[in-house]
Image (cartoon, rainbow, N blue to C red; front, side, top):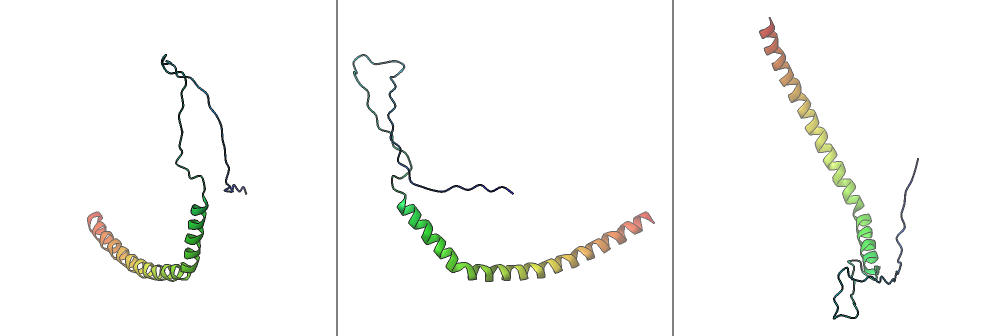
Length: 102
């Protein structure tokens, strides 16, 4: 059995990329630009939010289990009803087929 995991950690990466334009403008002597990423510089707020969501999910777990058991019991009743309907439909179709083939 194989297992793959990933650990989140904060990394700071600074780099400089010097590239001149393909068609330089003769009047401009230097080029300067700033790149911004959608990732926050500090992810502490995201970690705190995830911890709160996890704690809320753990606290709500008994309610989730109770709701799941209720839905399971309902689906068992519906299954028994659908089996009875399917048997009746099969009996009616079988009788109609027997009349045609006789």
